[in-house]
Image 1 (cartoon, rainbow, N blue to C red):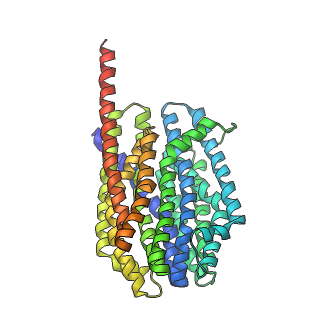
Image 2 (cartoon, rainbow, N blue to C red):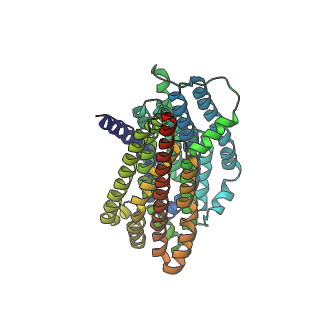
Image 3 (cartoon, rainbow, N blue to C red):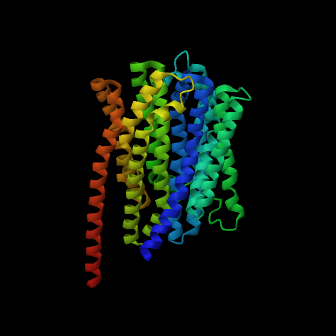
Length: 449
């Protein structure tokens, strides 16, 4: 019965977190769909050139929010209320600090950034518009992620889910209104995306009025240890998004050299569909974190191990289901984002979807393992595995495989990197399990003495 109750808790947090992350991923997916209809192949390519910057902003918000909320849960479990509130306050300080360079980049360097990301004459103006607006609204994205993470860890996963889903539904509606009836083009697409976190913040703030809020802003100076906790425990989330950005930039460079803007647009379909899949795994990872951090803080190691098994099995199983779904529906998915009916775009994107998504079962397992390490205050293996799968393995493999097998090799680089990381993750989990068993034996021996 105890295991059944634990599984029910995991299922509640994970399902609501997955729903919320799916809603958040619709920010970009809705843009992809409406931009393809309203602005065609070049608009889709421009969007894909700009997406890495969204990943960096989103990753910074997740790092501060997830890292701070994880430490908050550990401190609440240890009944250290004052320090828990200081973590929340310092998370807000960090979000404000990160906003400054993002806003300055949007105001002063959006054109240089568009060129650096690979935009050519046909896509430069649209890419610049998207980047500039996105960066100027970065404070809203950061604050939305921070509030959603703390609300979730404070026992309100349903409200956290509503905050992200509500913002996403408004984004979908506003995308259509701004691009078509209002004729606002690329600015309309990005403006709709930027209003979504504003709405999400409004929903999250309802938690303060509900009488159950366990965190509040307190008068405290910025504290280096609090910042370090946010960085170390949330780094896997930031590294995940940063590596997504790095991979998209590298893949854009490679595919542009092979197939031009048609190839970049096709990769945009693959990458943005993959963002939805990865958001599911992020949801599982964020869902297991609150109960796992509480169990770790209270010394319930058996529950920690059970939650790890639940998260790893759920993420890997969902990954397999996603690959099978995409394998049989690759052409229809590609055609959804092909407003001009370009046969070459559909062909390249469909092949890419089938090959790229082979890596999803491994990616799900890897992200669950990274989240479990971070949730139990073991940031080093979490950070190492995230860097391995996101940068160290996939980027060299992309260039090597593309040189050997062209665009087919490029699609296969992602599953190869995820499979390699899965082997390393399994070894890390085995090592930590053995080390935990030895520590338990030593504690028992000392107790017997």
